[in-house]
Length: 265
Image (cartoon, rainbow, N blue to C red; front, side, top):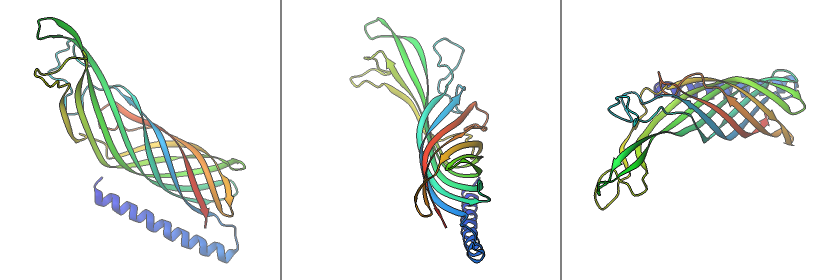
């Protein structure tokens, strides 16, 4: 998805929200019905759980040439990273318990995947030592997300939520490198200054998915503060259906605790 399409979609969401608020306020004012529309802000610092099983990024080998030797690094596997997100919440109460809503958020998804290789190296004095290299891929994603969902109040302020997260990836970058972990006095190249990191590459994450879908489920508890204003501690879990990079086994599930502040208009 290109930047113009994403900007157009966000403008439509904004215009729809304004029209919805104006129409709802006018209708409820004329009919004397209780206020049903809420608008608010939310923030979260969530845990992104990466599940991975791949050797290299497309057209960016972390180790070359691969001949099947025992000194080659294994596949990249999972990791856990913490990242923030914040956004806008719109909600409309259909009846006493059921409501529908839309969330629009900005989020980052940064993580560091690693794998290692063990091998033998020669020293300048003719002896040998066991060596270990760590190969790392650090990704950095910036995301605009839409989350349409339905919510049901099961008891007083306690509600369950079910919906889907639509992620539009606006930026996807990566850094790849090899670092000598052992021996402690080793170096990739001779000389008076030890060099323990090599083969550093930086660029756009190749074949990154610019749009992903993830079902979400959540639980929240609304705490009244003053008339029409509530604070809502919450936690949401999303299940990554689509990979970060096309054709690679690399998906992300997220557990996001956070807080929403909502005001009934």
